[in-house]
Amino acid sequence: MKVIKANEFFKDKLYESLSKIMKPIVVADSIQTPANMGMILRVADNVGCGKVIFVQEEFSVRKNKIKKTAQTSFKNIPWEVCTPEELDDKLPATYRRIAIDTVEDSVGLYEYGFPPQCAFFVGNEAHGISPQLLATCTDFVHIPMPGNTISMNVSHALAVVLFEWVRRSTTK
Image (cartoon, rainbow, N blue to C red):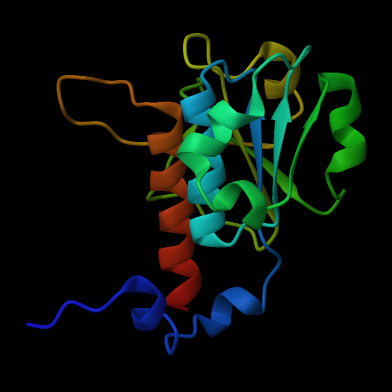
């Protein structure tokens, strides 16, 4: 079996249904680890998200630490930093705000019906999405975890949800 470089492999594979819908937006609340920030940029770029918004009260991370993990995604995908108070101005009103979190009324990922315009919210590595931002979300989705460990790295959780969104968007 011949191994094909990714840029050659995907060159002729058109995911037409994705180009017909609005690109999702990622909102990352109070992420502390530059490596997680870089991985969030990278997975958002993999999926073709419209942008990533890091919500931070203050941004003191050195960008070169984020870039080390994000690699080319650092420049490929638009991203910005804002405060919680500025977030409403950054998100289109037509986008559903979907929290990826384990809250009381959350729906399992595989039962959830994705709307065409999504803003996916993920939270801080230790505390999740802040109550302030959680209150702005309209939908709540959790990832079923039947194993012994019932937590997941924030960038991995985002990847699971975004690629489920891709799977459903490309099989309609």
